[in-house]
Length: 153
Image (cartoon, one colour):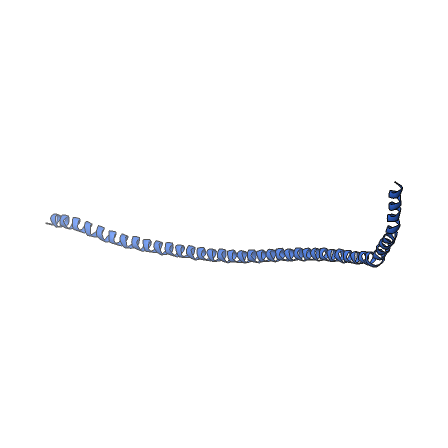
């Protein structure tokens, strides 16, 4: 067993330079690589976070511009609808005026036609009355002539 302990002691003694070398490499790694690596990672993280924040700001700005654009489009549509409605109103007003004018002309034409018809009826009645008087005179004369001729004989 002593020999095993002695071999173990020799191994431990032989591993001391390896341990020291390992500690030196670990220390050099911490000083040279790890510190710089942490610095690069922190810088990358800040750049990434900055890019994310910038992207979020750009997205918010784009959303605001989109909302403004949509608002302007709604206003433009409303203006167009108002203009169309005003135009329709003018067209309807002009149509109503044209209809009223046409009705007035038609009423005047109907009145003129009625007056003309009444004049024609009055003239026809006058003519018929004259013809009736003439026929009555002719009938009376034709009835009385033979009676007078017979009475005068």
